Amino acid sequence: MKKYILASGLVFAATGLFTGCNDDFLERYPQDRVTNQTFWNTENDLRVYNNGLYDMARNDDNVPILHAHYNGFESHWGSVWFLDEFADNMAPTHPRHAFFQQVRSGKHTVPTTPQWFGYRGWNFVRAINVGLANYDKAAVAQNIKDRYIGEARLFRGWFYAEKVTKFGDVPWVEKELSIDSPELFAARTARDVAMEKVLEDLNFASTKLPDSWGDGNAPGRLNRWCALLVKSRVCLFEGTWRKYHGGADANKWLEEAAKASKELMDKGPYRLYSTGNPDSDYNAYHRVLNLAGNPEVLYWRKYQLGVFTNHVQSYFEYAGGATKSMVEDYLCTDGKPITVSPLYKGDDKIEDVFENRDPRLRQTVLHPADAAKYKYHLADGRSYPRIQGMAGGYISTTGYHIIKHYNADDMIGKAFDTAESPAIILRFAEALLNYAEAQAELGKITQADLDITINKLRDRVKMPHLKIGEVPVDPRYAADGVSPLINEIRRERRVELFMEGFRYNDLRRWKLGKKLTTPTMGIRWDAAAIARYPGATVKTIVDPVSGKTYIDVYQGTDWASPVFDESKHYLWPIPLNDLAQNPAIKQNPGW
Image (tube, rainbow, N blue to C red; front, side, top):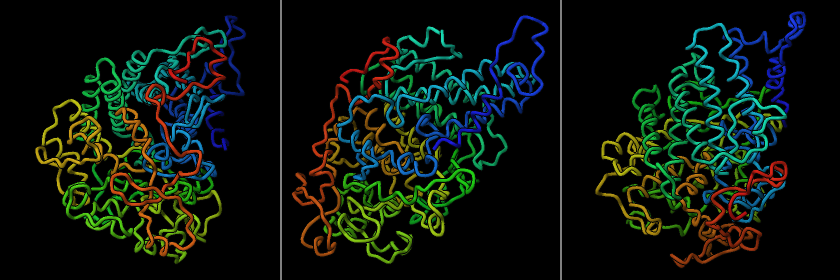
C-alpha cells in the first residue's frame, strides 16, 4: 500500500539532517552521500525536497488534503469520491465501508489508533518544518526561495486546517523536534491560535507562489491560484463555524474567504468548462483520463500505468447510490424546488424523477435510458436500476446509480488495480460557490455577486438565474434557521459539488448535524416497483411528509436509527494511544 512513498523517504534520507561537529577535521563532509550541510544550495535542491512533500501528500489517509484516490486496492475506500458517504448524499452498505456508515449514523466510538483520515500524518509537518529551517541556505534569489517556502507553508497551513475541522485544538509545531523537545508533551494549541497561524501560512503562500510554474497543469505543482482557493475554502469553513457554533471574529474569516475567492475570479486564468451543451458539460470532464489544459481545473492527480494507479471505477457499487434526499435537491427547470414547482412529475417511477429537472441530475444519477450511453457495468445490456437482491450487474442500495464520474473505458481490458481515472482536487466552480456563500453570510451579497457566481453555474446547464427578491421558499428547509437565499446557495453547493467530498464538512460547519438523523431512503417502492425489479429484497419506510413508501436502506442494520449528539459529534475523538502517550492532551468534549 505504501510503496509509493519510497521516493519521499529517499529524499528525506538523502538530505540527512545530520548535525556538524566543532572539530575542523571532522567537518570534512562525506563524499559518498548527500548531507544536510551540502544539500541546500540550488533551486533544484529546493525543488527536489518539495517533490518529497508531494509524494508524502499522495498518502490520502495520513495527509488528506490533496485528496484524490488512494493507490491500487485502497482506492475502494480512500477515494475523495466516497467522502460523501459520511453524510446524507450517499448510502453505502458494503462492510468495507463500515467506518463511513458508523460516522453517518453517529455510532462511531473512541478509537485506539487513528481512524481513516484522522489524527495522523504528523511526520508530514516535521518534513515541512525541516525544509523551512533550511530553504534560506540556498544561493538563489529570495523570490525563488519564497516559491518553495510558500509551497511548504501552503501544505502546512492546509494540513493543520484540515485537522482543526475534525479535532478543534491541534498540536501546532513550527520547528523540527527532537526526542527531548518539550512540545512532544505539550497540550494542544487552542483552535483560535492555531487558525491564526494557518492564516499566516496561507497568506504567505497566496502572495509568494508563482502564478504559474510553467508545467502546463499536467498536473504540475500548486500555484498561487491554488493557494487562493485553499485559503477561501479554509476561511469559509472557519467563518461559518464561528458564526454558527460561537466564536470570535467570524466576519473576519468570511471577509478573507470572499477576498481570496474574488481575487482568483478576477485575476486568475480559470473559467468554467463549457462547450455550450447543457446536457453533457457538467459531467463530461469528470469522466476523462487526462485533465491537462482544462480551464476549470486548478489541480488534479494523474494516474498512469506502471507509475501510480487505482481501481476506483470498480468500486462504484460500494457507494450504494445517491439518496432520495440528494435527488430531491435538484430544482425543476423553472428554477423552483420540487415542493412548489408545477413542473415536478413526481417519483412514481424513476423516469419521472428526471422530467423537467436541472440537467445536472441526469449527469449525476443514471437515467434508465442512458445505460447504453455510459456503457454501464461494461455495457452488460441489463436494465437499470438494479436493486439489492437482483441477480447480476451493478447493484444499488437506493436505486439511484451514480454516473457523474463513471468511465467504463477505464475498466475495459485493464487488469485489477491498474486503472487510471484521475481525481479533481481543486476546481474553479468552488471559488464561485465560496464567494457567493461568504458574501451572503456577511449580509452583503448583491445581484451582481449572484450573476458572477451561482448564475454562471446555472448558465452552464441552462437553468434559470437566482434573483434576489425572487427566491423560492422550500418548506424542506424551513427549520434550518437561515434566509431562503442562503438556503438556495447551500443547495447549489450540494448539487454542484456532489461526490467531491464537501457535504459532511458543510453540514458540520453550518451546525446542521441533525440532517444526518433523517432516515436514508431510496426510490419509490410500490406494487409497480415490485413487478419491475424481480428478486429485489428491500426494507421500506413510509415518508412522513408525502405518505408514500420508499426503500429504507438501513432498516434492520446496525446503522438504523441514526443519532447525532450535538455535544460531541461535530468533532472527532482523539485516539486512546495518543492520550496515553501525552497526558497533556485532553479528549474532545463528550467522548
